[in-house]
Length: 237
Image 1 (cartoon, helix red, strand yellow):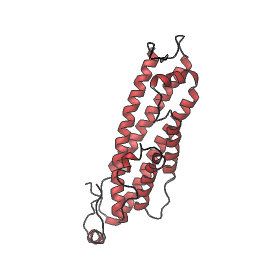
Image 2 (tube, one colour):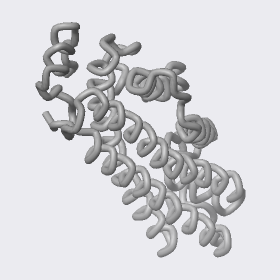
Image 3 (cartoon, one colour):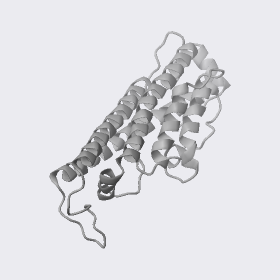
């Protein structure tokens, strides 16, 4: 929930009253850890796809044989289903931690800049899933919060690297957001593994760059908060 800001509030803080900033130090660390966790899950996923490619497709054909017919899975295929399920949980945890950080980042940026965010609060969540706008809204929300926190400073390069790699993974159709079923991806690993691995690499790169972006944006906001409040540490609310 955003906090109201204004000249009177600024005068109160200047007189020594602690500003009601939200804690981004801990949430930033958790968000970075969540990104790295998701990246690690995709490294394991890529390793399993490589194992499938090296093992080769069984003589009985792909798992999904069409018209609703599915053959029994091999042990390796069954373990790949487990790997993708664990990866899905890791991505969910990552998303929750990242969004928690973004909400707090926006609230603090509003206090520091004295202006409302460029994007309405609903877009913090809907911006990831609404077609077309999901190509730039999430990056724009982070960039807007950074500019509100550190006016005049260039946006960290890691933010653009994170978003560029995320788009590569998403638009490839086999990254974090994909339409193929797990059995269909298994079939692709047998016949065309390189596009899968390229997409996995983009996702892993996005996760690592995202962790650096979170750290850089958080550090910039914390520095500005220290300037605004003097020697006091920001108080969680």
